[in-house]
Amino acid sequence: MKSLRIGGKIRRLRQERRLSQAQMATELAISPSYLNLIESNQRPVTVPVLLRLAEKFQVDLASLGGEGDEQLQTDLMEALSDPVFEAADVKASDVKELVAQLPAMGRAFLGLYQAYRRGGAGDSRFGDEADGEGGIHALPSEEVTEFLQRRRNHFPELEEAAEQLWQENGLALLTLQQDLVKVLNMRFAVDVEIASVDAMQGLLRYYNPLTRRLMLSELLPLPSRTFQLAHQIAFLGYRKEIDQAVSGGKSSSPEADALAASALANYFAAAVMAPYDRFLEAARSTRYAIDILQHRFGLSFEQVCHRLTTLQRPGNEGIPFHLIRVDIAGNISKRFSLSGIQIARFGAACPRWNVYDAFATPGMLRVQVSKMPDGSQFFCIARTLTPAGRAFIRGGMPQRAGTLAIGLGTAISHAREIVYADGLNLDDPQVVTPIGVSCRTCPRTDCADRAMPALAQRLSIDENKRGLSTYSAAG
Image (tube, rainbow, N blue to C red; front, side, top):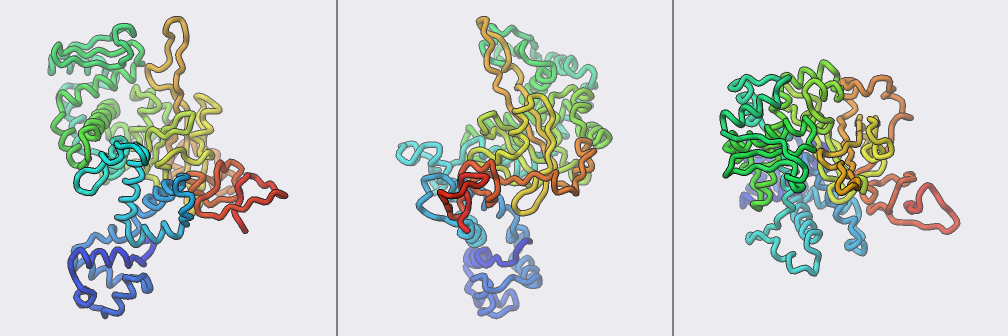
């Protein structure tokens, strides 16, 4: 635990169990006055008291510590950076105290803010977000992101299902696409057709359950075709496993359930294309060389990056990666973090992240050693990509491809396990790029890329001075 001053959580625990301070103090073998000081954060909680808490009240000590607090604090700071709160003059210390004392209130505020962003303060839909029990529905995409984060993006039941598919059907990497077509035909009586652009009418995959025909667009490259075949097999042959996993997410809407099911079908497809043990062994032996893994398993760059984030089987884990996918406007369409890095939740991330630099050198792999304001360091790679089916010519005119960028990274302690760190002096401070989560939450005042003032600092404008940025903190 980063801090043992967790008085608010102790007080809430006591109140939930309907105990007086005297009653809880007796259970913990301390005086009521000392418990009062703990609850008011005037005294830290000692290890013996923590152990008695765990013993007497069956408390998970991790729930009392700082796990999740940093992310909640970052999310709140991001939300409060909205101009609608500008007059409130909320300080970073206020947010830190709220998270430490009343984390449930912080999460409730985030839910309310999300509903506001979806409907607007004056929109009648805003009131419809309530679930009837005083809660507020989150965006389906956000719910699924949080669900995957809670599960560490690892689903053993789907890994086992993928392995079962391999064993029962004698699949092979060199003929995987043809093998999956046979599985669909022989096991599920599904015919597969590679259809023309005109026939697909803007779709990349279309399955008709009445005719039992799966149509894949001719625009899909080979890795994407294989992926879509496995995705369809997931729903036809392993729906029970997917539904059981989705039900554990306890989402608040059918839309979130459907989106989660699609995400897990994608997970299954990746597990089929890159079997866990074989892929992890290859990743380690090549030192996570993405281009080699692409060719060895017939995957795209994005598919390799995604699969690397799922290798968390207990006792046989890969490197804990984070992943972020952005467009050229800075919108984050995918985010996941096992590395410990904090990723912006509302809006764009820090412009110094190399995932944004990647747009300046399309197709080229960018490498970065970065350092967050709290001192934590990360090794990251990034590259642009064009999603399958986006780049084509219609009516004689080329359509905009919609380039995206993928960022993959991990804590600096794992950098030497990755081939892309070779040649870098990781101990040289000059190779380190100071970054933050976003401008409004970052305390750095010496950043030339700052696009707006920091929420936690008072702005000082001197007409006679101009620093690296228009915005500088008061001295």
